Image (cartoon, rainbow, N blue to C red; front, top):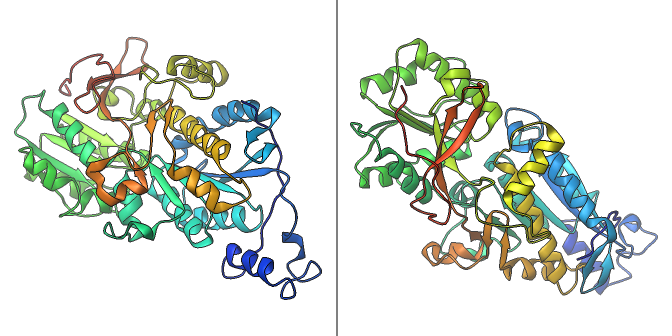
Length: 442
């Protein structure tokens, strides 16, 4: 494989850039090279991949591996990418969403209109993936996203599952809330509890999807014998969780779950311990995916649990180099001085998919050809298989969503005061080895 580094192809835009391009091609008299739009009409000599990521703000932990992965990918792309159009240089243009949905949409449009990206990739929670995907759909730019459950990505963009053609240019791969329900309840079934669960759901795309009375996690939890006490939505970066803690005490909740940003978990869990609320299990999505977030809690982080998307021991290898997860994670730690973190796998696989798509596209200058290549993807990546259309249980949604494996884990405080993430449940992905059993919080 060959790949390389700098692109300058940009595009015209009126209602959207594709509309104007088609008009210019069809009626040369309408738009000329000497017109207002002249800078946008030039031969494509390279490919630009746009990447939007929350490198700063409360979601910054999701981007901790960005610099490392981008360095690896840029080195691999150093000699140009062999495509159906020949060997073409590639540039990855990165923009920071600052953990703000409005900013994510703004920089996505900049990448499309000003930079002329041929393919957009985006990761890390619906606050980032959704506005970028929506902008790409409007502008008819192919987009691949990950690291957000598929329900808030799909339903959060007002999609109708019966009309999958609503999304022509945007494709997503990750797990769904049905996988959360199966994994979390299997973890809790290892403990002796009263099956009363307190739910923490913020007023954002994730929280509204998880906490939806009909489509969220509560109905599935109920089917598994668990009752969820939901005190209602709260605003991100809340400073006082006393109302939620008192509601969980009233419900005699022995389990807490939710989808929380890292700063809010620190506030909630510290106040819970101060106010005498000590459940047997706290299985929290989003907030404790990362070593840095658990380290911030000190000993209070021991035996907190969460979903696990990827570990170095997952039995998958890089489609680019053949390296194992252990080799990639060790390289990250050597480069950064930090322990491995789950986004390493998914940011890496995001670019694996992007490169594979561009290699197979019939014409890398044609957004429709790139989109057709995305739809035809069947790739084994560092995080497992990515193939749109393979998940029959999703029905028409599978055209735009490819599910990835999910297991459950617990953070264990070691003697040296560092934390280790131990896989304790693999009912939905038995190919991922267990490393321990679920333990109650002391």
